[in-house]
Image (cartoon, rainbow, N blue to C red):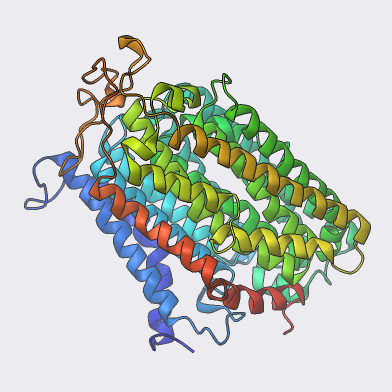
Length: 565
């Protein structure tokens, strides 16, 4: 069944367009704007160009999803297979199935929302041209990662996103941005070198780099020792990107320093590339190697769940001077732990839960970083003690819609039934209760219990954040000294705000300060436009999980069966 009937050749074109268009758009962004498209100033023209290109890619992704045959989600569709390097049998092989399609649409959606948000709220930094070009290159690399079906092309796409994200953090980030950017690039590059060795080992030993052929073979052409070495090498590279405890330490620094849209893209799509690699490559290509390492992967996953939650609790306590962006980053370590636990079960239930949790995390954490960025823009800080009720923060009283949305995102993140965050965690825990044959049931049930305990810790720190930031005392007179007053919220502009505008947090010059608690601007129209789709999809996925599970389950069943339905 398809929503609209589209010919195979048009489907091929749409997928190729989705992958290539952002790259071409990035090149065009660096060129002078043609006459008639320059708008009021060159900055506005290039930002509008970013919105246009990402919007076109999103429309193409939606049309592709509408033309996708939902009756056969396990079949690769919209495929292109062209020889590229015959000597190495490397092919330009593209295609999508029920596993990759949701990630493709999520990436296109989040990038468009980030471009739209940046049009009105451009982070302080160098040329807007460079900013738009880097975001588009980042989008192209991420989309290619989810669309390619060749191991070497997967590696190239996987690496393509590193340099744009490095510069987005280093040039448009906040405090400590240079150190955070270096930490990000060093960790991920070192992991990628090891991953490349594993990919080459699989390709050379099996005689092909084609991911579909390798999945169908299901490891029969690889000895157990080769599979174990390959899983260790590739798994390390993917674990850094996921990130898995204890390889996560680059993430909190990167999120804290990154601009708002950088944090949204990093959490919403880049982290998914690592877990996607586990599902697309390691589970079907090296099942014996995965079975060897599955208990260790699950153990690291549940440690990450508890560790991330405890770190968030420590940051949320009074007097800890915890940064709200850093807290959300540590929460991602815990949430991605659930994804890894689901993958480690090697069962359809667990892997479906992992894929569902991937999408839910992208929607909810993307929304959280948007909201925290908005709060930081209004106050000039994301320090929890400054935002707490004792300083007169009380978002419910001063910016009720913003406070309500922050509370909504927090309860969605803690896994409230009826919202998207619930299903992924529940399915991964069910998968751990009854893992795949050959895995220790007592061990995995222990992991399940630890993961369930982690959900309680998640609820604890998220509710503390809501209580401190949203429900604090709304004092008529501020208890802060004049030099400590929160900044007056800048008025929403009709177009992009130039970097360094007086009164904006990025300018380093505080806005008007008064002896009374300053009024905060509630949600601006451009913020509502960027956040509403994430809220709506979080509710839809929570109330109607079959939308996603109907796509992923047949594809997962076939993947785990080695290409045999």
